[in-house]
Image (tube, rainbow, N blue to C red; front, side, top):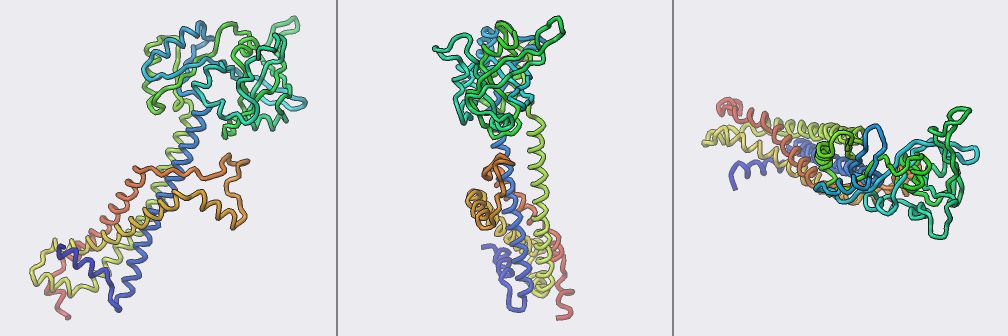
Length: 420
């Protein structure tokens, strides 16, 4: 063991008269521990929220949407076949997208009506897995139903609450782009039957989306054999930007591809920015602890003035003296970081039972699903975040040791021993 490390470890073991320094050392270590623990827990929760949100977005929307600018897409089957030929594309499905009004009794709500091909939509989105009542397959007419049977409609859970709808209820779908009559433009209206209710967990989707089959949407909007666009599922959801640019380049003018990140860039940017800001804010806790480490070293240097002078008289260099105090401060930082990582991981990996226990004890429901659409903390620990936090904490601790250690290395033996 190098003598610098040996002496640094001895200085950490305070004697009875140095109890005050020992207390400050403990407080500094605890400060680093709390800072690292808070960083790991908060970043795990925010990463979990981000991952949960992305999961919900991708569960309802496709990875890439291709539309035709200014007009409906004709010959969409051949376009689908061409899009499937792009490297990375796994599946494709046509869709129709339009704004309508739903009317049920005295309740009215504006929604986005999507026409989907039931057979291929389940290959691209996870809509069928979010259905809580009924079935997405019932959007397509069964063999026993005649041509005049009421077409099926699937609505979100929040929209069903707002319109007071249940399975089997009939609701009028009204399109503002109606038929031209001698009295002017008359809205197009048609009754639909609720055959399914879905719950994505996103209020925006559950309160503003409704689904019908592709054929019924084409008939209702008088689109003939055309669609609004094509939805694509890709292998790598985080490389959709490059694939979108390739599709735009290869498909030529008139076609426009947008990936899920572009369509949700505001909320994704907000989450990323918030995570960075929280990292910076919580790092201040570690900085405060670093001041404690620096204060501890200054007091140790003042107390060990005679020891430093004796070491220098025996041939110890200024570099060796500096190493003693740098190592002493680093040991405090490393111990605090290890304890912080251990406690942070323990809390982050068991956050849900901890929160449930606190809720039972206090009688408070921190995350009511009716308000936040979350009944748990979606904590997710990322290895790179833990490494970044650990390195940052140790680096800050190291920087805090430099000035007091440098001051100790500059001490002259004659000056230190003059009054001894």
